[in-house]
Length: 507
Ligand SMILES: *[C@@H]1O[C@H](CO)[C@@H](O)[C@H](O)[C@H]1NC(C)=O
Image 1 (cartoon, rainbow, N blue to C red):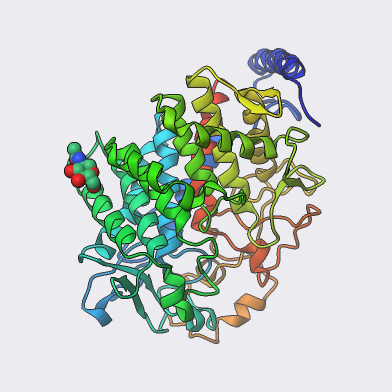
Image 2 (cartoon, helix red, strand yellow):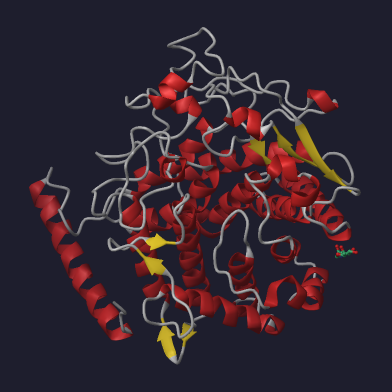
């Protein structure tokens, strides 16, 4: 159903009246806080949990303030096979490999979340910054040598053939790198985007660290741009089919340059975008925003410079951003529109669909923010789409994720009364070190994998791949497509939850 601006205003008015009503009754009725229909979710609780999740994905030496206490140190000699220190960083998902490409994207999206919505995160701002720093400390190690980036630690095939706790893992910690002879422009440019965006996060709270981040970002981007090529060629046998770059490296070069422009305000990056923009994806129509494809993310990001800094040459990015936004508003696009499940969830694909839900929702809220600040709207085929229409679509996605769906299932572990019990995650599904100090070897773990019992360690805040196109969810551990969490599902969700926690905090 498409909402006209008028009907949207009407709905907004009605919900305002109902909210005021439930606020009034809340005062009189005391414990009857949960109006069955109109009281929103506890977005603040969900926000805190979405950030806490990152502690469960930590690799390396855990600090004394580690709250997710069932996790212990792991990967303490990572990098030693190449005489470098690569201890730290994040495991991407339910395994024990450190994949640099999605880790960098995760970092960029966590940073973007803080850049746009950190101002309303309150107590969670520091936790979000710690989650970013855990990644950037690692990315600084991975980029310490000139013209080299260490892009992976762990042999994914051998790791996936085992079901082991990270604390026990004994599969090869193979170190992979890109350099002049084996380029990897997509990983380099995404790493530059991560470091550049994080430099903005720490700009006032830790200027020294911020300067180190931006200095490294500039150098890493230069390297990735100068030695062009995809890491999926040179490292094919290791990175494919896991995080093979299907969309090429052009989108990351554009996205990386856009982030460097935002972080440095150096106009040479604008010149770069103008000179290379067409070749770097001016004609790209795939709107799938995620660890592989950054096209629409770059368009939304560059729209800000057009809308707010008045960089006229970026008009086409605003037009492209509108086209993307229109495809999400039912009935508003002439060319393509996205698919929703019968229950209303944005549906792109069966494997880890929720990553597109959270990334797209973040773009909707961010674009709505830019439009509001510049007093403009999106244009769809002669129709005007206001920022509030975008926020309403975003809210519906987040509310679905948190439990307003046909199965009444929250897809965030530990949030709500009903959530996935058997997530595809080695550390969560095996007994903790405290419960079972003795080593559980590679193949012994599979009895836990195949068991029907709930996971013993609750990976609070983990959001799984999510339901199928008919809103179904079997909650089976072997089903990695639907039951595996990942850092890049959560990263953009952090920003969206901060926005809603703030907007509904008066309740
Ligand atoms: C802007 O970036 C260019 C290219 O990286 C560099 O040569 C130049 O020194 C930078 N300018 C400033 C003011 O930092």
